[in-house]
Length: 203
Image (cartoon, rainbow, N blue to C red; front, side, top):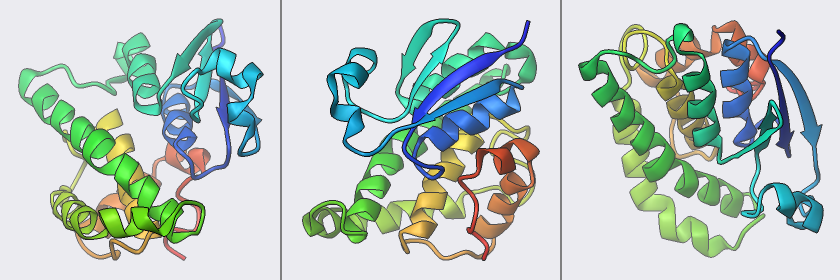
């Protein structure tokens, strides 16, 4: 039976990219529904996702919300893919990186980028800039010299790469070793290329 997922998104570079990448790693057929900013506040969309956030996903008739949670739920449906490690040591490292990238870094990085781009009040940029840059730099410097965060590729790499990508795009990080080498290993994955949110990163 074919695996199918429907994803509601704004653009390639929003957090739908994490879900799109995970779904491609798992061999899902992806149906993408692009909506305009503002449409996520309509009654019709709010019935699916009362948090008025992007992305929303639907798998087998079940609505899923929150990008990181969607990635985890997809990975848990397919343990044979190894996107969540099995060993205790690897899982401890996995959840640490998942938490830092998705909780400590992702939202401030998105708010900073939107503020810098003029979509949000400039106060967000001033509020987050210094502490966010320091934390992103620490995180970037912790990327492995070879392989991936848990040696084998997992969704911790998807979540980490997303936050790092936003950090670079926002001008808070500069590409250089080990960050660039790590991101290039991620981008080399066919599923990452199919996710499209790395396009233009190395131009």
